[in-house]
Image (cartoon, rainbow, N blue to C red):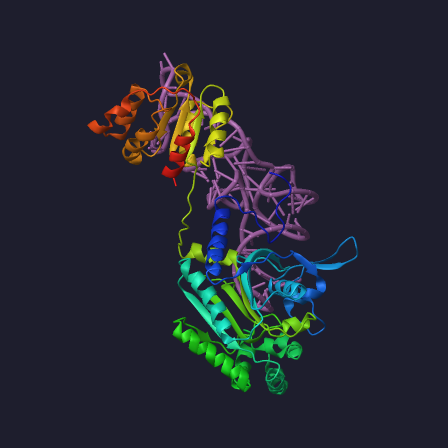
Length: 464
RNA sequence: GUGGUCGUAGCUCAGUUGGUUAGAGCGCUAGGUUGUGGCCCUAGAGGUCGGGGGUUCGAGUCCCCUCGGUCACCCCA
């Protein structure tokens, strides 16, 4: 054991768990490509100003959770705490045609106290659709998130929705809320008694009993929407009904990022017992472009944390359809050179194969072959060297008979199986070969010990 | 950042009120007569008991600090 370990809140992903993450990304990719979203790759760090947009930004994420640093050129930079601001920055920089529909997968960094389902580096997949405030896009974004999670096999999902108003109606609402909280500030929880005025909306998100009691009678944003926002929201709700996507209206769903306007949403997995049960969330950010110094451009998107999705999958017993193991495992009993030749030939032909090293015994190599979950073992030892042959062994005895008849058709030029080996195979499986397979027991000499192109193609086809 | 809790082999965990060379299962490696895996049997490797300091004749067991996990808060994916 080394004296070093991965930093707090980070983790190493080893095979096969790493493949589960890769599977999530693959499934997300194929899902969003159905809706014509294109991949965007943007830097893992940005100018600090991309995330800290003026003094108005008081979200915790920006004020105390960011990994900030100064590079050798004196630039103030930050590791991306979330994806949306980066994508919007890229959009404004390159000015692509709208609607700009992009998906991403990227690590995100937040300096928080780690917990299960909450890491200092975590990985998000996300979508952004920039350039229109059509509520049809709200439906598209929300349905993609919901359908993707459902397609993974997750049940027990809860979609929460709210509308936060826009620049027309929110200021008036905030004044209402402000005066209400001012009147009741002495009843708020200890923390908000002092901090409520910094961001009054956050009080609505507070779970302390004092605040919960106060916010029940507080003015609700969605009762004070302007006609445009109201229409937008109602159109979305109707569309969700039509799409048969169940949702809960949540007056208190405020979310932590300042740029959210109008539609906000969050999907929680009720299978996750901890407080970190949100597996995806997002909303409309019609003001973000302006805050970044661009033209006023509406947009909507969401991000989903892969670590949490994976936790939810594990909790619900989702099985990932992964194909483990190579097709062929080469066993070399005469020094290892032959294994080198054969594996290289197979790989160049596109056949996945593995071998063992260090001149292990036959028994040991077969054990490795078994553990590798290879379908076939290809053995070359003294005998094969003598008569210029190779022995092919099916590692899954149950499938052997079916394969043998098929393989006999095309392996005749190079596979040699000695009769005693075949009888061993027969007795092992407890089955005897039928008459039509009898020719298979004959010996086939090969002119070249390397498999021919034809055989490679056939094996490849066979194991597809 | 605040508070609680935990930290013994690669993994899951035993380890009596502090007392000899720290254990088990799984995994790993090698064997089980001379070339055939999975099951079984045998043996072996692997631990500065998270790290550092202290109390003591003696600490895996007690105290302090620190690192890490975990839970709640905060906040969020």
